[in-house]
Image 1 (cartoon, one colour):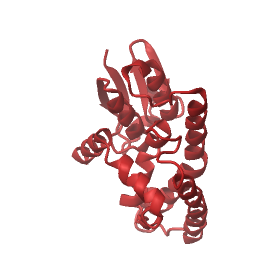
Image 2 (cartoon, one colour; image 1 turned 90 degrees about the vertical axis):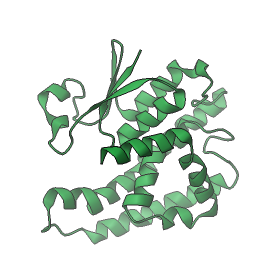
Image 3 (spheres, one colour; image 1 turned 135 degrees about the vertical axis):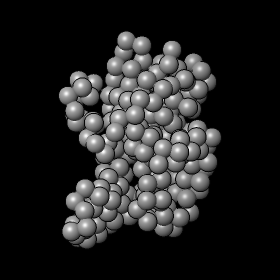
Length: 219
């Protein structure tokens, strides 16, 4: 059965779901949602995702939204396939959940607010918009401290939840790429030995390379 993904290939949260599907070897179909025309805010889409955000999925008769909930669902449903994205023990699963929470509330919060100030608002508001540099500096400083924690943790662990690649790592892929490629902050990663080694590892996975390729073709 083909999983239908209602989203946008350039969307960070959609990319998170696509990376998971590809890692699991699942067939999927992307139904494009035009963010530039605010399709995600239209009544027909709000029936699928009442908060007007992408992505949402259909897996047969089952419907789900919120990207981190989706990847947990997919990894749980298909864990027998051999891709142990949830971890293999109770302790590993707890660590996966821990780092998914860290990603959502510490790392992604900083990256999103930087993207909002440096990319999203200028695009929406046009040439007259002046970036609030005080906000940018605030989130740069917050992110700096967050990534110091990551670097220390990764000095003792190959991956965030231990010795294996899991959803904890996968969930970081889209926002980290945005930080490096779009926000001009590659030095936040490359300037930290352990963090950079981890990033070079996870971003070279075939599944993620395919997501990046699809995103580039959609540009």
